[in-house]
Image (spheres, one colour):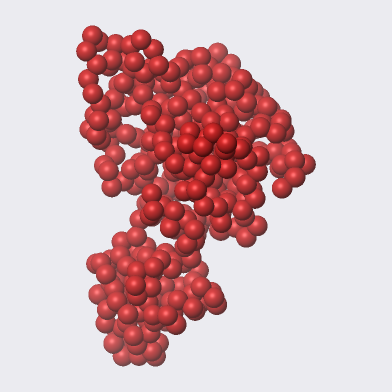
Length: 394
């Protein structure tokens, strides 16, 4: 992608989602790790400037746990914060302080901010997902700036986003953003992990992130965050499937966000895919955790991958789990390789009765008027091998 193409896209952006991590928003002091109010003020100033250009702005902000840790450690004895309960408690202390700082910083510039706390369960439920979409829509119609974070104080481990890079990638679909900016402590993406390889070189553009080996390019995490460059690239890969470009840029360089939006060649631009996923299928693929597994034979694998067909009962060899109709399931090869995720037309108990049967035999077993397909292709998303293999190897 040329610099002109990047500039043209930036010129047409109307709604930007910005994610900022703890490594950008915190600093070490003699009392320990604390919220960096100078960095937060700088970010609010830049977001306000973009907002003044009539852009819709959504901010996904980390920093609550680190802010809470900084307050707790003001005492003479700083407790060790480890594990989910401690992190949730630190977030309970820090979240209000983080939001108060944003409120003040935006108010000084004539802006209204709004706090939104989410768990993964909020985005898995289609009803709650759509309700959240309406809420965001109203806030932006009122020209407010939503500030989003994971609801750390109530989330259980099974429903964690894991990091705010993941949360931000899912919100791209919900708020219908046309640009994703990920502010990090690094200057962008490098050819190799610069902490391990001094000869690593920065990348101005990633043209095909679907084929990029993420493990070869990065590794490790910042000491105050939960993500690292790996999670940022994984989020960018999801954004690319949705047709949204990502800009990974330093949150520590002066006015880097505004400079990048003005077309300056800083950071790393991640080009979106040409063949994009529908917003409904994106929600299906990334917002909902599979409730069970369907194993299929080689013929079914070829039909799904090569011919874009629906999954028929005749191709099913085994069913694992106890899921209901309409549940999201993972479709696997007989040796466990991932093929797709999709919405099941039948309960698990029903699929066990009709698996391996011809379509015209379904009525004999289960009665008339039922589906020919176990999972229809319109309710199915093929899984990218490059994506899940990277995740599983971490």
